Image 1 (cartoon, rainbow, N blue to C red):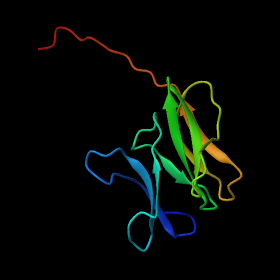
Image 2: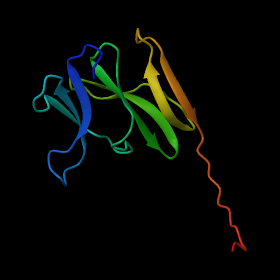
Image 3: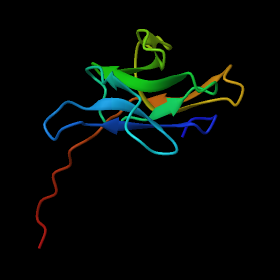
Length: 120
């Protein structure tokens, strides 16, 4: 829900096999008033946050194991890259109430494979 309480942002598909879009829906109900293409390297379940002024959405775009935050203005102008990280992935982010600061939790994702033998 947008900070001004007027809008809901969600992932949306107009048809079952259609690509996912980011939709802006009136809080009081009705069809989407605006939709945006979901860029490549953005998972449809990716975290999306409203900017505190309710005029744009922020989302995580990842590629080659590196994540950055992008801003999509609601006026339809092109999205803009807000961070320029050169490594690691973003796990979570949110704006300060006044919108002047952005808190980001990020790091490297690692995994190991362990082989266990002789179990009964």
